[in-house]
Amino acid sequence: MKLTHTLLTLSLVATTAIFTGCGQTADKSASTSSQVDSDLLIESEPADAKDVGEVFEASKDGDEVTIVGRIGGSQAPFVDGLAAFTIVDTGIPHCADDEGCPTPWDYCCTTNQLPGNQATVKIVDESGQPIPKTAKGLLGINELSVVVVKGNAVRDDAGNLSVTANQVYVKDKK
Image 1 (tube, one colour):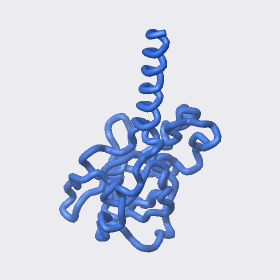
Image 2 (cartoon, one colour):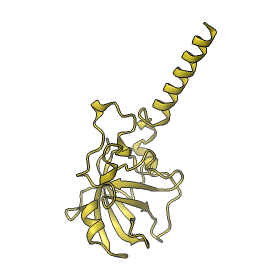
Image 3 (cartoon, one colour):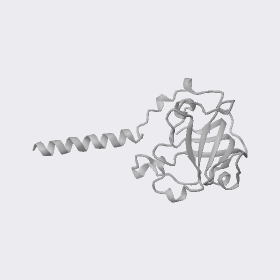
Image 4 (cartoon, one colour):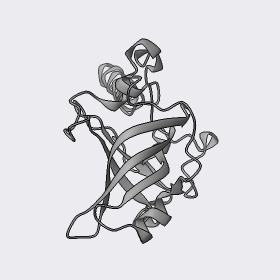
C-alpha cells in the first residue's frame, strides 16, 4: 500500500513537472504591454518580408533582411537574459493543439525540416549591442508567436543564419 502511494505521488509530481516545466501553461500575463519596448516594435507589417527558408537560401553575411517566422525550433526558443530567440519558416508545421504535445513549438514531428528553415534572431540596440533582457517580456511575445524582424544577416562558418535586428513587428502573439 505504501509503495503504491509513493509511486502515485511520484507519478503526479513528474506529470506536474512536465506540464509546468515545458511551458504549456506559460504565464502570458508576464508579458504585459507596459513592459514592451516601443522603440523596437514597429506598428505596421513590412511589405517586403520573406520567410525564413527564402532568406536562409538567398542571404549573405551582412545583407539587410526582413524576415518572417514563428518562434520555436526547440523546447526553449528564448535565451534567458538576452533578447534572442529562434524562428522557423511559417510553412513548416508545428504540432497541432489536438495532438496533445506539451511543447508544440519544438517541432518534434518535423525536426527533419528545420535545417535551412530556422534562424536565430538577436535584438540589438542602436549601437549594435545585444539587449540584456529576455525577448518574451521585452516584446510581449511567446512561443509560436509570428514575428517580422528587420536587421542584418549574419552567417557563421557552418552556414547557419542569424539576424541582428533592431525592429520587430509582432504579427501574431499566440
